[in-house]
Length: 473
Image (tube, rainbow, N blue to C red):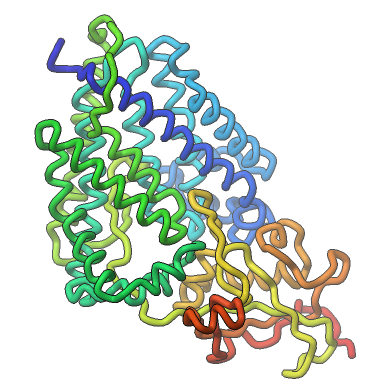
């Protein structure tokens, strides 16, 4: 039926699906390379310990049925393989029903990972990938034109992402209403990128313009996604430009990229649509049933958006089918970093030979310039930013991190940029100290080449050694 499909969006669907497969691939790759130290049997937050206390119905996952590090690795690498196949267009070689099932495979595998991921996977972009991935599975392949209802539901996700983020800002930190948040944000964001220093040093009047433009993009433009063309395409294009600006300004995992993927659902890309037969009846019934379920589940996110006690990044069902989003409802004015150090000295003193561990993405050495990692997500580095905000954010894993460093645990050290100790010589003591970090000025940068300057604040963790290890001088 003509009302059911939108042939003019066949190219938008194609680009959307390939881009989504690329995001899936990055997500599974990160899981495969990082899980052992974070979630493995000897990880900081082991999956078996979590599944022993968490019922399956509250966190459905394959790992409730069986867990081993080898099985987890197999699931993660299988997710990489299926994502790569979808990126190459494998779904277009299959019948319509098989293509749908193939798209549901990475969704089910990643759901299994997220639902046992605990603190390491407690980010909004995890739920956003799952919600988008589930719905996009019903976009169909070359056998049918894209269903209108699925395209509009993808826009509905994008609306909630942007409008929810805009509302949380206006209700949250006063600096968003005063247009001053970007005086701090580029310096205090979780993981700065290679251009963040330059963004921070833009003139303050331009920062005011940036914040005002952000409010327009998040509170006004989303409504236009449901307008007739070409207005909807213009709104989507503006959102894509805004997201690319954010990509340049920092490392936000795949949050910006999955938002761009969603914007493609409203972007009418030019091209001649191929001739395809009408959608089969079973497909229409399936799509409409899924749509009705998602509309019904949208009750909770809508209620959350209109509430004065709006919360960010919460899932309302264990399958992450419909969620609420938001980012930076409050902005830190000061940047603190936890610097972790170890020593081989048998008696730890202030003048001992303390050597600093270097992380891949989080600021450490003031002379080391930040790198671009997004859309790849460095989970430990992100959690270290939260640890610096308050020890309470790190209470369930920081002690385990220190223990692994004292053991020179190979999997944990792989998460770092560099360990200051040889593999066969673990430190006898590890300590952590809190520093205040600031961007240097233009003059300081030219003179020293350092992008950061840091000031000692206080002790974060006193010198600690493994229990039962004798003290040696």
